[in-house]
Length: 323
Image 1 (cartoon, rainbow, N blue to C red):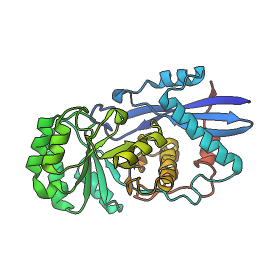
Image 2: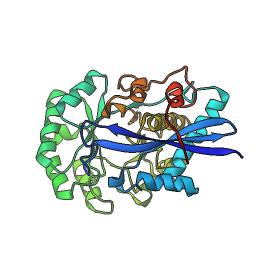
Image 3: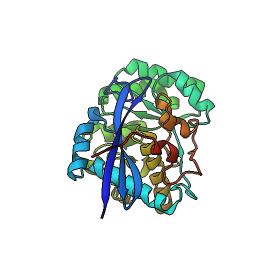
Image 4: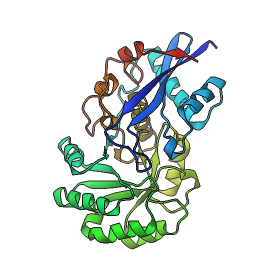
């Protein structure tokens, strides 16, 4: 088999830090191009080192040496699916129903207002250690948009005491707007079950799902790093819903997440949550790639004239370096 692998390093710029563990606004990654028998397929490597991923250089080294960590393997699976569609001259999204999305919010009430104006009925808020700041924002949302569903993502930086204080101070009416709370603090803490039972809130897990027990209600699945079928099968057995999200990565990786969400929604009837997290390109400063996805809205948009995951013209002029 005649296979060649190329990479293109990129840098995405966000307005603010995109998780509670980092204030970085420059985010590096690499597109990969896997050419086989004259046809290329594309994928994306976008590590979040602060959340435990290997560095970009380490991932590129694994790719070059043929070592397939989970993240590298997912990028290669993306390239395979993309190449097969390009070889057939079709779009991966043709005839596929991609679930609608929540808005991913980094910032204050102004960002929430923009999301509501764009048609979102659910927002995922990146929250952190500042309890009073979190409380103020959630109260503002409750007062301004009492019917808006909120998903809170702590990236593991809260604690049981801080979270309970937040839930108590919010009051019952505002708590009812909380769809789920994602990764407030490490798994295994008995407070997961205690707070869920006491306040009627749902919990979601992003990383470490395979090690989690009966402490949570929603599995967050990221095709960039997760074994999709294994996670979906486990969720079915446990009676959990699955929310598919992008990895807040390049639009090529974002598009792969959208494709996987549509495919899993078709395969696992009723398992995939009706509000996924696929529309994340608006978190970054505009590029030709982000602009090709159109305005950020709950509904997935794709170029019906392109093949595979799309971006045909843009990928053709990217500066590729062979590994």
